[in-house]
Length: 421
Ligand code: PMP
Image (cartoon, rainbow, N blue to C red; front, top):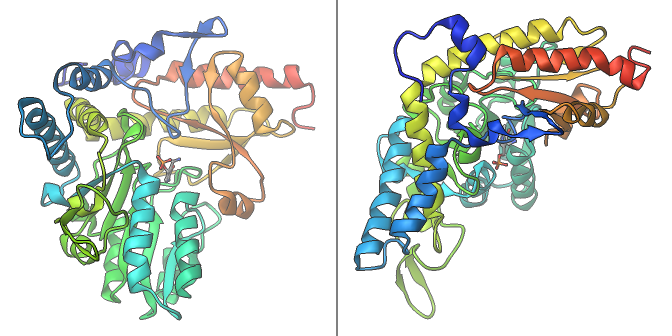
């Protein structure tokens, strides 16, 4: 890991803020050239400390948690609960119990929609979302709205891709029970003013649900400062393992929620006809949890903290600014989303080339980007496109990676022969 302290700006611009050597996969070649990985919004690569933390758990302490009264079981339980405490302090949670381990952000959002929504929504109530939600923060609400008779409403976007906050008061009313929205759009990079939206929603008695899948990995996030009721994120987008994520909730909200899954771990007492529930967070963690994943997530958080979330946000913001500047030099390119502030990603289209073809062309040159609808079909419809390309950054990316992308885009016309037509 890079030593903390004053890091030469030009040096980090060349080498990245993370040491690339910390990430074994970044040493590999793709089609005979070194990998340039620009698909971090889909998932990030894993440093050796994360890979080793998971492996060490399986090598030395593997056992089921919370039940066993033997050394390995106690070690596994201690490490799992320590991971919860690490998560809690990373996001400013007043208590570790407020962090529920789930599989990913999608499961976290579904848990709120089903476990809170089904019991608190009825016909005539409103759920306020935004036009730019990932399907994970849209489809669960559609499903719950259909069953409860609640109505979905959508905050619109301004032409530059920012949220129309001026319209918030016309959408918020006593009928609004839930306001669920993304902290950072995975397509536009738009950053929403979470604290302000939460304040205004709560004044009318609505609960707030924040999809933080694209913010927790890239900037300091403090749930207490944000003032939300729920916040969801995935470990795999923050250098941690796949298959583990977090739902953070206000204690009273979690306490008033019924569990979604029944089974082992989540009960206090079980009778043949009925059962009572374990306390928060265990009533939401039915069955054997992903212990290795939680330990890997804690290792990722320790790694991020070693560098500092402020430093990461600053580095990525400069790199994204550079990417925007360079991408705009590509003839005819269309870049989506606001100028600034924005998350560490840029969605774009090169005229005359389908993003899938573009992605395949770049892959031949070792450059990994994303192409498609990014699980945000309504937003793409709003942008009047069916797909976009997207480059998304992490602190191991450098200006040289951006240059490699832009240089390759400069050759795309020769390859396809019709760019700009
Ligand atoms: N929300 C946003 C904004 C995302 O970008 C993603 C992942 N692309 C998700 C939710 C869902 O994350 P996961 O697939 O890890 O559940």
